[in-house]
Length: 349
Ligand SMILES: [Zn+2]
Image 1 (cartoon, rainbow, N blue to C red):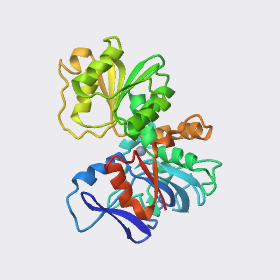
Image 2: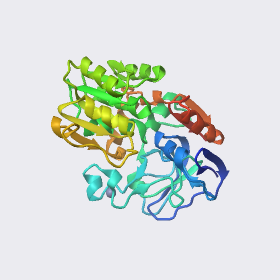
Image 3: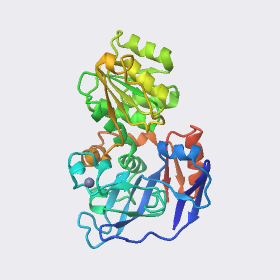
Image 4: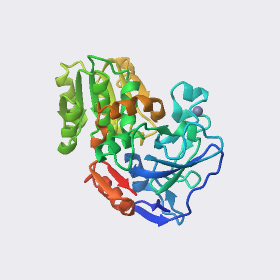
């Protein structure tokens, strides 16, 4: 089969590799219908040290089950499924508490051992917990918009949703979203779903912030740093935001977050932090009684409700995709996303 491998910063290749096979009775083999490039894939794209052995890439897919191990009971050959971006048994203590990304038996795609999902075929470990069936949809005839929206449930939309969930967004609140990438825009849509009254989107790419307005943003602040903080404070009558959803992961975004959070408010981070140390003292969190939340999104916890919303046409999170390329052009998909010519690229095999 054809699969995506990264050999170093900026070096993504599509190559022929052995087809994945069942390794455990709990595995399933899935033929990929759509996969995509994640913002987090851009971190190794910038910094990976050169290697002679490529690293398999990708952790988001929708696909059709081809084969199941003898212990798999929740999915069967022919099922149309979504794979949440982390695999999990969905039965252990942390899974039952809704934190499947901390599953005691779970793990991550995109390593030589687990393989990547930017490929024609994928092996899914712990298939009973790690695949969710989409009922009554035939991917061969479904329209592109529906497939795109279902693909966002593998990671991006539900990562944005997790940001809002962990910030305990509720009706009537002011929410500030930092970052106008696909996760930030998803966080806007999720905050709207949870009833936020005012949603301030901090971002400066007009095409993206326009989609943010369509998703529910009431205000857009293009300025950054102290100027951006000042704008948000002005918009909130000097009070600040009940919830701040930080979808970037760099220190200036964290600084903006504690700058605009309201006394007693919650900062929820889903941008993977590219820093180890961050201020928590009187001038940042302590003085405002602000709380810090967030982490890798347990998207498995939110699947069933989100699938129902997408199938009912209540949300169209797939609008974050603005480029669809064949798998053979995966290197171009990375380049487009990295150069910010594309918000998020999907691939078809
Ligand atoms: Zn578990």
